[in-house]
Figure (cartoon, rainbow, N blue to C red):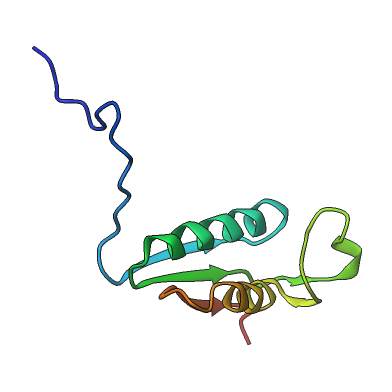
Length: 102
């Protein structure tokens, strides 16, 4: 008994998300902010209408600069979203920010 392989040799991987998919990323610290940048770039490359929700209630401060990369101080989700929107403006990727509770 043999199963059909998921990816056949010599065929490119064709990633697919359902139309209007939502991807949520919780925590945008040292590792999460790096994952967010690569994930946003990947999702934008798919060319489909996808929403990336960035969730973090904490703020970036200059004292965190030894372990995080942010363009400015402020809520991590907001600062990172602003950076990614500017970089990926030509893609259909949409962003939503969930920050601190008021």
